[in-house]
Image (cartoon, rainbow, N blue to C red; front, side):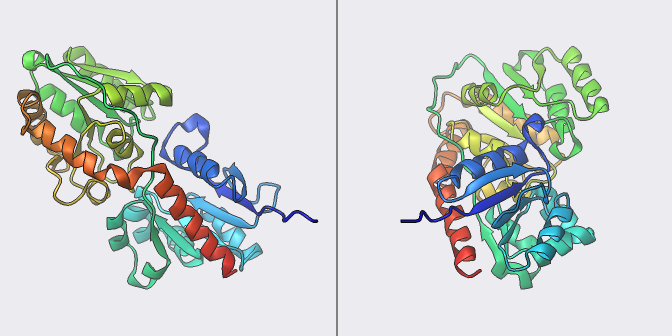
Length: 328
């Protein structure tokens, strides 16, 4: 009896393992999740010397040449485009290549439900909300002597590390709030600023890039994660924090609100360092209070955790791809 051939799937990711960023984490996780249904591989571009039955491309603008080449070569084969934060909140409104990618795709993946509002209404029928996921880590006992704060984000403007530095400078060394910052120096000027703030503020440390496993343990041990981005498609680090029992303080931008919910109490207005510093002080002052801000945020994040379970993401991906291959 002849064995049925397993279909092949190519994931195009502009970033590979050495970038250690969200695009790479997504590509790697999806390849693993789909490995039982598809022969999967990850490439920076297509064509890559091998054919495939399905193409999944991360980033409408940066993967635009691969998307166009696939659509021309295989117009009837499934083409899925996953939209990043820079896609949703910038490129698809201004960049012709990104706009064309939306039109060529058979399906669009957005990573949180508010992303739908950025798409032209005519494309809503193509869009599928698939929350990213992370394995759960158990909550750990944390000291009440001080507040341990963590930011995870490479040093680039979209992640707005400047806001964290301004908040650190607004805090006093004796406030009992200690801030660690994990992230690669993608911008030399920002790296210089990080070093300058660290020299001025003994309660702030820039730790540079760290292995993913070490970063997840740091998230698990922190009292609170700070995520001050200007724009987000659906931040990995938010769902990793939620899945580690660590609450989040985040800028009130659609990508973060789509992850944490409209009524979440842990938002600060984009660019408002004084508001972030005040929220950190509230977390520190109330960390032992069962109805304090830190406890409220922890409970709210616990309620969002089911959205970020791996089995939920895997089922959503498989359902989408199955629907496309059936109608091919």
